[in-house]
Image 1: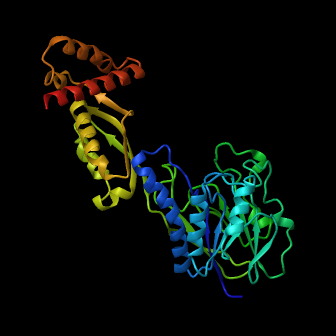
Image 2 (image 1 turned 120 degrees about the vertical axis):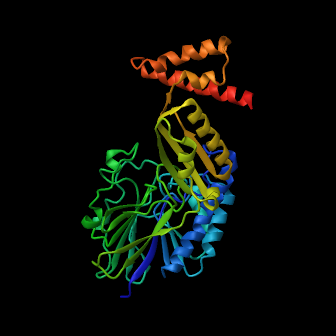
Image 3 (image 1 turned 90 degrees about the horizontal axis):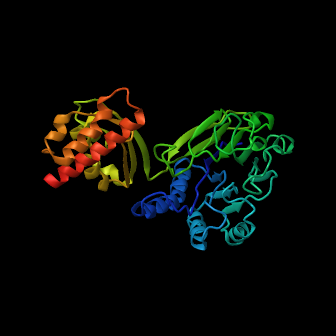
Length: 377
């Protein structure tokens, strides 16, 4: 038989509201998520793949708006010559019966909703073994039927599931729901396509998490991606290639600082080229030590750069203050403020002071210094 090529994706989370992001970026993030459908179709065409397997969480909730699911079907219908195979996951499980009934009723001919845990021929000599989630917490490993599932001799066997793998760190996973890492071997699968983990991960030669086509947080840095998979025949090791699909680039960068270092310049060195900033969501964690003027310069540089980014955040709680009375003397000329500054400076000058006292004193001095500089300007 000729090689069978397909795109493995998961966790589209269409309709996600991005409530934790600033309002200015939410629309862009939602649009990027919808556009992931077009990116997956391009990946399929570029790799001569006639099928896209979505391993769960097509939608972010069990109650997406009609606009969300109908626009999704329209986008999939526009991918001529490509079949979409949609697996309900934990966010959009089969408990949302009315959702999947409506999707199936209005789905174009190239879109298929997988509601049964049974082998299905999706192409000549290619059997798909889906494991749709009956509810958010099914209470068992839904791939356990695969080893005994009969398929024609000589046919390719592809598993499609959504969930965690044993030894895989995923909060809230129940032991009875964990998918064994050797399921591909025990079930005689040529490939096991998994979803749920939003980062791309190889569990074994035949078992992969595709990752989300659009990232939705800093936990998985970079741009979203999918996997282009080629099966040359039953028993042959899959050829798996990562394919970038994401529009938004999530990045988290450390900024270690030392006293005397130009903090603003160090920040500038971490920033991507200007042309990439609108699509970048960047979080910078400053650590180490810096003086009051250096910290003030750092925050001014961050405030100046922030409007160019889709999202920008400087976290400076881990940056200790290198205290020098002369720094405040330059902006305070005696009086009550001078006395208050000196009182705040005592914990910073005392290395035996509790760490929390030193942190709070440093934060207060930095705030005071910034206010005074604003008044002076």
